[in-house]
Image (tube, rainbow, N blue to C red; front, side):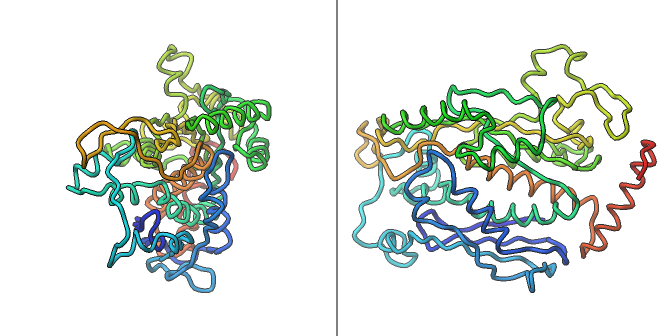
Length: 388
C-alpha cells in the first residue's frame, strides 16, 4: 500500500489518495471522523481547534461501506479557508504582506533557502502539522484493516515537559490504560501527574512559551513474523521509526526500552523464554521486535516531541528581506500538542503494521487474506505446541 496527501494549512482543504487497499474491508465514515476528532482534542491546543471540526468526504474507492480494491480518495475541507482566500488563492494573491521572518525550530529558514522563495508562507503552509489530519484519516483505514484480525493500537502521554511518569512495559493492564486515557484531557494515565502537567501548560501559555513531552504507542496481537531481517528497508523497527519520526515535532523514537537496555547488562534486558501456554517471554524490553521482525509480544514505541516552535513571545530571528536580526514572527498556534501527536502516531503505526501485514498475507479480497492468515496462525501454533 501507499498513500499521498496534498494541501496547505490554510488552503481549501487536504486531499488523500490511498492505493493498494484490498477489496472487502468495511470502512465507516463515522470511524474516520471519530479519529479526526480525537486528534483535535487535548489540553494546550490552540484556537484553531475551535474553528476546524474535521470531517472526511469520501470521494472514491468505497461503495456501500466496503472497499473496492481501487484507489481510495478523501477530502478534508478547511473551514478557515474563507478567512484566507486573499492569501492562499491558487490563482491570485492580493492585499498580502510576505512573511520574511523565519521561526527557530521550524522549516521556515531551511525551506525558504532550499526552494529559492522570498515568502516563507510558501514553506510554512505545507510544513504545518495541519497535514497530519490527512494522515489520521489514512490511519483510520489502516485500523479498519487491522481490526479484522484483532490487532489494536493505543497511545498515551508519558510526560509533559519535566512532569514525568515512567511506563513499565512489563507491568500494565491494556484495558486500564485504554479506559483512563480516553477520559483524560491530556491522555495521561496518572491523574495527579496530569494535573501537574496542566498547571505547567497554563504557566507556559501565560508566559508566551510552549511545551513538548513524550508519548507511548502500543500494538497488541501483531502476529510473529511481520517485517524481515533480510534488507535494511524491510526491518519492522526501522519502518516504524521512520514513520513516527516523520510526524512534525517528533525528534526522537525508541523501540521498546532501547535507552534503558543500553545502560544494562544483556542478562538483565534480553527477554528470556518461558513456556506458560501462550505466554512465551518473561519480559518485553525489546518492545515486540527482534531482528527487524515482530516476535508476537506487544509492540512498544516511545516518541519525544519538541515544544511547538511558534511562540507567542517569539525568539529573535533573521529577516531574510532586511538581512538583519530582528523581532520574531508569531502566527496562531498551540501551546502543547503531545496528546494529539500520539493520535497521529497511532495512525502512522497502524499504517506500517497494516502494510507489512498485507505484504505477508496478501490477496485481492479480505476473504483471501483471512484464509492465508488463519493457515499461518495454525502453523505457528503447531510449531510452538499451542492449541489453536
